Image (tube, rainbow, N blue to C red; front, side, top):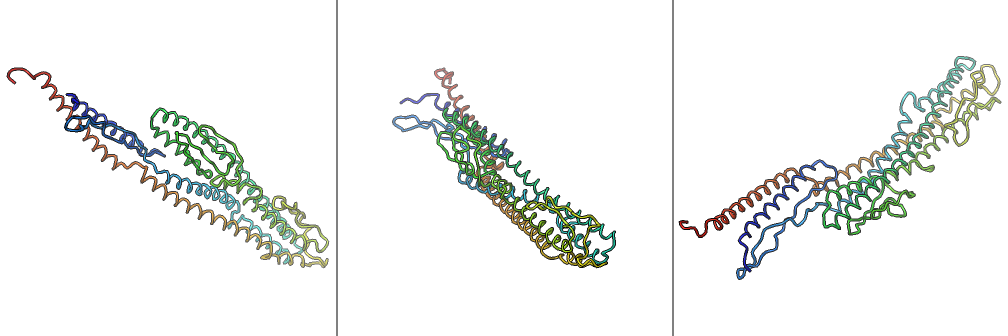
Length: 432
């Protein structure tokens, strides 16, 4: 087979075009060095179909770009999403418990512990001066402050639970939004792949959304082979995304991730509700202990409350003049005041100390879990970055390499052009 006179020119042109596209890809990488979710790309260069040069053999015809490859490790993606799910759970749990811890305000001069101390001290003062009106008034004021402290803490815990429920609802809306975006991108990716194109940037955007989704609950992705995917989310009965269809909302019970923590915290039988139950039991136990002694002489109950919600409803039920100091009726008697003052350090105080200790332990565990999950996520992200991230040093090296190859191809084209010019314009002329 005869070789075209212009073959060398075409070979050099292919080299110029291929190196130019490789430079374009390098520039795209450099431009996106700080773009979240971006995966570096490479132009895969391959030799073009050779020509038969009989009898010498096959003669190469240059180079072409076979594809633009996105550098991505799907195994690292799976690992990162699993760790991100744990991080989402830990952070949401820490945030919820931190609000409860702030509501306790312990230790401080206005926390329940301090108010309890002042209340017991007020009874001891009454025991020392049972007939002093000012001392009784101080007791009534101290008791009212203690009741208000219980009311306020119960209200704040209820508010935290309500806010957690609202956050859960907002997060569910975020899931729906992300699912819709994934389905839309999947439609565009499918269309591009059917047209024989490689939609690398669209794939990056979809993967970034999947990463965000994994923070909210457990995510499992199945590649359906034509650019479409199926996304299992949490413990939902049906996939969140199936090709370009979004199936939402769905009931979730233990989805893990941020949603799992929010559901656990906000549940009527969840962590925050258990705190309120324990606080109510403590308030009721305190009131019943004081009332049992205060009514022993026939007087009224010192505290009033509603069973089951004692912390929210606790109130002082007596005036300063109704405060009972003795069950014997003896003038100057103080046996009731002494007995109530002796409750200090007993069951009520121990119950509150246990309550504060439980919240502190839960918060400490949540904080440690959040810190550990942060370390693990960062470690996997670094692994992904080492694979998919853009290295400016590497890209600059590639840029110089492709530039020199471009220049060499251009110089080869000039050489072929000069040879052809001699052949076409000067061959056959006398005097050459």
